Image 1 (cartoon, rainbow, N blue to C red):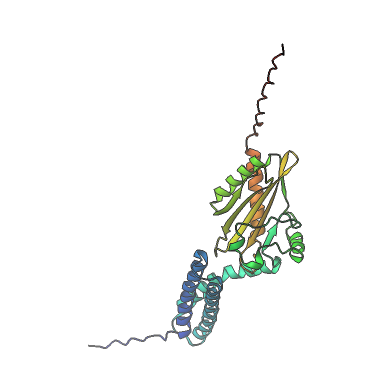
Image 2 (cartoon, rainbow, N blue to C red):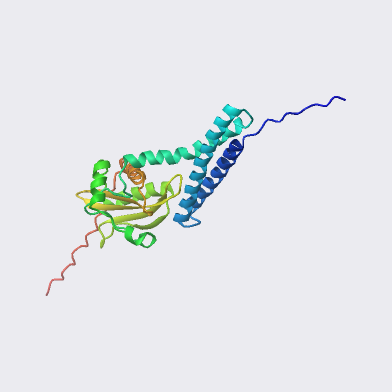
Length: 277
């Protein structure tokens, strides 16, 4: 019987390791994103884990390029694995590259307020924020905010504070954000406040929101503040949230029914005097 000769092409080790590292980087990156979203661990270690995933992806790209050169010169198998390693690694690096591009264009701040002179103050959420991130920074932060987000300003509406508070509370409830405190206007407190916490879409960073409603003539003035809990630039997320909220509130106020005038208390009849005899 004639013997068949099987010639096995040399499989490029660079291609093999590129594919393996890209898959490992995706797994580590997904795990770190899950940790950040759920808040199961501290922010620092979780972010370091995500950074390690990006490093593995970069090495996988390097190995894929070396594999392309080796296969081109010497032949052999592994082109498909090298392409897979390259594409998966690029896919993982696309989002950080997008964030880096935004970081170059946007100011390095993470606390945005419609009123930088007298910003709303966190009360119920103060204990959950880092000690040095409770008060609005002001100063250079305010200057950078006005330069980059000059359109963010207080909202004036025609509804009285009580009705405005109910409309704004409905908008916040529609977002299903956990509300830490909701104080309507009262006789001893003219201003109404609502404090809630939102989460960023991808990494799940906590960003606290406070809304202040104050009387302004026959209507109300609405001030908003959105601030991150981590000491890194927010890449415009807080400003985008305030813009969206201002539009939602303005739209909800325009659709709100006209407030009914409060009934006047009935006047008591004056007591009759019995004439003296």
